[in-house]
Image (cartoon, rainbow, N blue to C red; front, side):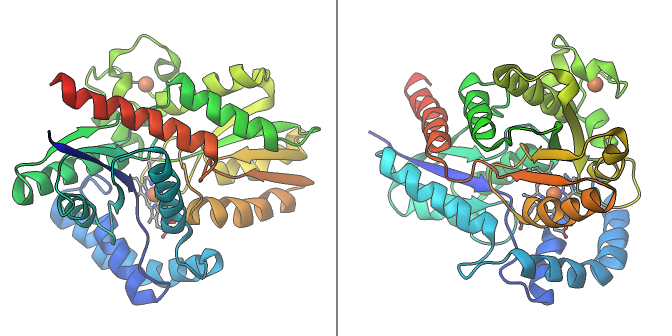
Length: 342
Ligand SMILES: C=CC1=C(C)c2cc3[nH]c(cc4nc(cc5[nH]c(cc1n2)c(C)c5CCC(=O)O)C(CCC(=O)O)=C4C)c(C)c3C=C
Ligand SMILES: [Fe+2]
Ligand SMILES: [Fe+2]
């Protein structure tokens, strides 16, 4: 019988906080055509001609503020998840990163060296995006075809609409919500609006109420819909009224229009509307990372307090919480079982 294994995929981080390492990481990341989706020449002009001239030094400083003795929080947490999952499941579990090391290729190789020929590959992103789920699957397929043609891969699909996940997220939030909060802000990583239009197979998205409707067939590829829908499901479980909930999108890069509203703008304006005691959660990320620990917990907090806010509670990602490990186990088991059906 074929041997099976699991590969958990996260985004990846630079190998260190040295400016050169951050530059190498950003080069690989931003030259991915699923991330900066311009024609190669224009992408190279923007990334290598403009962004990589100044951003690595700035990002390296930011990484220094979150880096731990064991390394980047994102990788350290992904490894903690791996170890905990390994204790609950009887097939080998490895990790791989879309950018930098350990790469997806390293992860597949580590499994293949254990004699594994059937892999469940789990992109650790609750919502589908061209710049996350799609690029992971495309890269893994490229590597499989070129280097491991005898290996079969089953992919865990985005799980934003699975009750086991939204129950887990709601419970995690419930435990950390302060009693007297004025609003709960769901801050998701942003993407350029163009990415939403590109992945809309029906070409009907108007970046408006269509993304709220449940009936649109293109929603399996609509990041904006999946973020709103995650929020709706979680607040229903928390029994929170909609007027205590805000959704916004963080981490935009460059001059293109990204999906709105922007988190930084939201944090600067809501204190004037009477929201002084804010709780904030970042459900596009399953593990804390630069974008949550620095951009939200430090910078975002400063923006909110300077604008007149009084209390800011950052609710950490699911990280290696036991109930989340259980969700991962169930989603992986489902795909392991699919191998028997094919
Ligand atoms: C959670 C989903 C993510 C989406 C969607 C996403 C899209 C996206 N990101 C950039 C540019 C950058 N993102 C950076 C960091 C970063 N992004 C995600 C996740 C998503 N990105 C994570 C988990 C992280 C943190 C990595 C870590 O090491 O902790 C960065 C690098 C840091 C910086 O310089 O600010 C950039 C750049 C684009 C352009 C994009 C969609 C088009
Ligand atoms: Fe990002
Ligand atoms: Fe839409």
